[in-house]
Amino acid sequence: MKRAFPIFGVVTAVLLSYGLYQALVVAPTEQTMGEVQRIFYYHVSSAWTAFLLFLINFVASIVYLVRRNTKADIIALVTAEVGVVFCTVVLVTGPIWARPVWGIWWTWDLRLTLTLVLWLIYVSYLMLRRFSTSGQTPLLAAALSVFGALDVPLVYFSIWYFRTQHPQPVVGGGGSIDPRMMHALLMNWAAFLCLAFMISWSRYRLERLRREVEEMQGLEALLEPRGVR
Amino acid sequence: MSSGLTTPTLIKDLRLEWRSKDAINSMLFFALLVVVIFSFAFDPIAEESRQIAGGLVWVAFLFAAVVALNQTWAREVRNAVLDAYRVSPAPPNSLFLAKAIGNFIFVCVLEALMTPLFIAFYNLRALGAAYLLPVVAILGTWALVVNGTFFAAMSLRTRSREIMLPLLLFPISIPAVLAMVSATSAILTGEYSPKFWIVLLVAYDVVFTTGCLLLFDTVLNAE
Image (cartoon, rainbow over all chains, first blue to last red):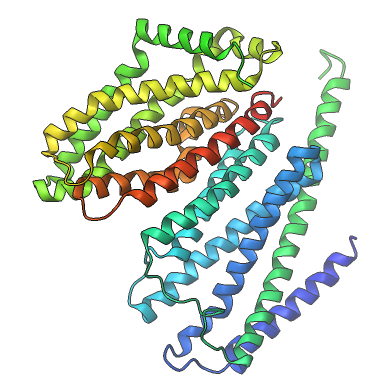
C-alpha cells in the first residue's frame, strides 16, 4: 500500500497536466463567453468531486452509526475536510466566471444557493468535530451528517420555489456541448477525483497515525508508576 | 414510545420556569432589543415594513429562541441529573419530547407577547389571510425548537457550547427559516399564496421530528 502511494501521485500529476493541456489548448474557445469559459473545466469538476465526497461522507456516517467502525469515522472526517476544500474552490471559481459572463458576482439561484448551504452545513460539521471533546465526537458528527443529508432535499425544494428563474445548466440542460469540451471536462474531472483521492488517502493515514499515537500515550500514562516522572 | 416520563418532566420544567422565569425574561428582553435595534437600523415606512416584517419577526424569534434553547439542558447537567436519566430504564425519547415541548411552549409564549409589540412598532396590518399566521407560527416554532433541542443536547459535549448551538442550528434551519419568512411575508402582503411554504414547513417538521426521535438515544448515550 505504501509503495502504491507515490505511483498514484505520479499518475495524478500526469492526469492533472493532461487535463490542463486539454482545457487550455485543445478545447475550442466558447463562442459567446470567450476564453473565460475555460474556468468551467475546473469549476464543474471541483463541484462534482465535492458532491461525491459529501455523498461518501454521508454513507460513511451511516456505516459508523450502524457498525461503530473506526475506519468509517476516519473516512467520514477525511471526506468532509477534502469536500469542503473542493466546495470552496467551486464557490471561488463560480463568481470569477459569473462576473464577466452574467455581469454579477453572485446570484441567489438554485445551484449556487444549494452549494453554499451545503458548504455551510459541512463547515458546521467540521466545527463540531473541532470543538467536541474527545470520545463522543464520531457519534455526534455522524448524527449531524445525517441531519445535513435530510436537509438537502428541503433546501432544494425551498430554493427551487423561491427562485424559479435559474439559468440553464451547461451540461445536460438541452444545449449541445462540443465533444472536445466534454473530453476536457471529463479528463479534468478524472484528474480532480485522483487528486481528491490522494489527499484523502494521505489524510486518512495521518489521522490513523494520530489516533494510534494518542492511544499509545494513553496506555503509557496508565502504565507509568505514580510519582515517578 | 413516550411513556410516563414526558408529562412529569414537562410539568417539572414548566414549574421551574414559572417560579424563576429565567428563560422567558431573557428571551423577551432579547427579542425586544432586536425589535428596537432593527427599527433604528432600517427605519421603514408602513409599506416597506410589510415587506420586511416577516424577516424581522423570525430573525428576532430565532435569536431569542437560541437563548432559551441554550438553557434547556444546563439544569440537568448540574448535579448529574442527565447521568441519572441515562442509567434509568426510561426511554430517552420521552425526555427529548418533554424538553422539546417545554421549549415550544416558552417560544410560543414569547411570540404571543412580542407580536403585539411588532404590530405597534412597525404599523403592521395583514393584507392576506391573517388566520394562517398562527398556523405558520406554530409550524415554524416547532421546526426551530425540535432541532434546537436536539443540537443543544449535542453541543453539551463540546467546548464553548453556548456558541456551538447556533453554529449547528442555523445552517440546518435555512429551509425552515426561508419557509417561515416567505409564508409570513405572503400573508402580510397578500401578493401570493403561502400554501407551498406551509406544506414545506409541515414536511420539515415531520422529517426532523422523526430524525431527532431516531437519533436522540444515540446522542444522549454518546460516551
